[in-house]
Image: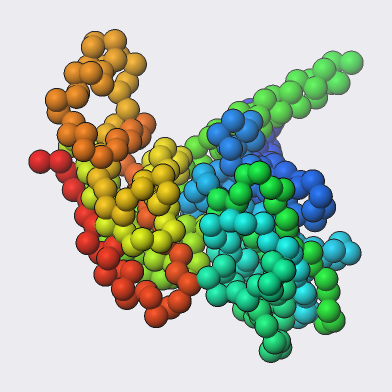
Length: 179
Length: 189
């Protein structure tokens, strides 16, 4: 009786541990740091990547299809000083865009995938020097402006479709501009 | 000593169970959850039919889609044979991705690779090792498959083909949707 109780408890603990570690792994293992852009991470979606299963799991367990093979999906949840992104603060994003067929910059709730608000290549104003500047703020701002529609912590997603392969992909800097 | 050994034994058992659960969950749970979401997102649409997803559903289903895009969907089932997707697309940037029901991308195409805005893609199920051994491979299929366009194989019978077209101006949406609505997805007769 005692032994079967211990066995049941052991198996239950093992199952719980397995599920918890798998769910945690979906949120982090498939991400890789981006060299040159310290706070950005990229989901590893190349077929040859050994962590592909976790990256796919991240999207699929949220009920979403992974991005197409030709797209690169970047994510961050902190500003340039390493503080978490918050919807009640204002941020200025700046980047010299790498040529690509299309890009989308979106704001989602922390840990979430579905973008709530976004700006895309088709509507953004880009300077003649190729520099894109976007303000994320609940208050109106001139130029490119994204209103975070959720409160609390938030994630930034930058999806680039078919970037020019010969160039290093530049990712936006994120500077806090008050709360 | 005996109690220590007993405790180590149970710890090893727990770790082994955790490992087995972890691997099983990673391999099977995402596909299961996604298949459920896919059924919900495409509810009301028959297999082997083409439709344009409404804006709310397209962002739920496709991680790279935003509300500023048009998404055409072919939900296919290859149990009864080859399915053909006849696509009619605008002369702008678009991508076509074919996924199996468990969410694996098995085929990808874009406007530059296609070189045309109207084309046909045939979808069939990957031959099993046994079928290939029995000589029921691609060569024997050739007369049955009308290769006017492209051909994609998927390891699972069911899946989804997704056409994604980003739009730069909301005013263009009706025009683009009208073009894409000319696409169809059906069992090859």
